[in-house]
Amino acid sequence: MTEKAVLAANAAFYRAFRDGDAEAMDLVWARSAAVACIHPGWPPLFGRDAVMKSWAGALSSSPAIAVESPRVVLTGGTAAVLCLERIGRSVLAATNLFVNEAGHWRIFHHHASAIARGAPRAKPPARPRVVH
Amino acid sequence: MTEKAVLAANAAFYRAFRDGDAEAMDLVWARSAAVACIHPGWPPLFGRDAVMKSWAGALSSSPAIAVESPRVVLTGGTAAVLCLERIGRSVLAATNLFVNEAGHWRIFHHHASAIARGAPRAKPPARPRVVH
Image (cartoon, rainbow over all chains, first blue to last red; front, side, top):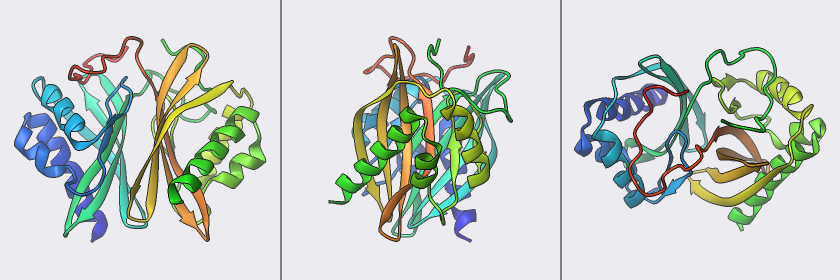
């Protein structure tokens, strides 16, 4: 039940993103909880104003984004959705955090990052010393 | 009080990483909560076994990692620490999620990703269409 509602909130977030719908994007973000965001290749943004401003820019060039393999991790009163984002031939990994505000699951943190082509899936990763 | 304890748990996580200390790394990860991890450039890993196995590999080549600007976001019963990781000349952004298990804040999700050199800090980001 909770998992289904969280997945619906995650889908609404990506629908707003794909549709470039600033009003819908505003609606899916938390009102009371502290809000943060790490866009791909970016340092963290803190606060609802900074985050929504960043989305205003991102939405102006909305990509044809598809969500794959969402999985919900419920812990305490919060929910994390880990999923893949497919944009053209690029694939990103995302961590989306949700909190229930007055019956509505709303996102309060989004972190997305590119998955390297040919990223190994079985052997242990080494933290890159040079990232570029 | 809580924030201080969460920051201490975050510091312990990075100390285990920097020291290549597998035992300490095992201790800082959650026992009861579901565990996940997104290493830089990697798809998500799920489950304590898969995550700890990945760390065994990462710890064998422990980098001289320094943590900067950690900020705690408390929501419900969980805590997120957003911070920067500096490894040589590379800088990564990290989301670390913590849950309180029997009085101990333990990490249950880690997501780290490279910050692009010269990443804009003010103008709106565009989701990359080609990530490489």
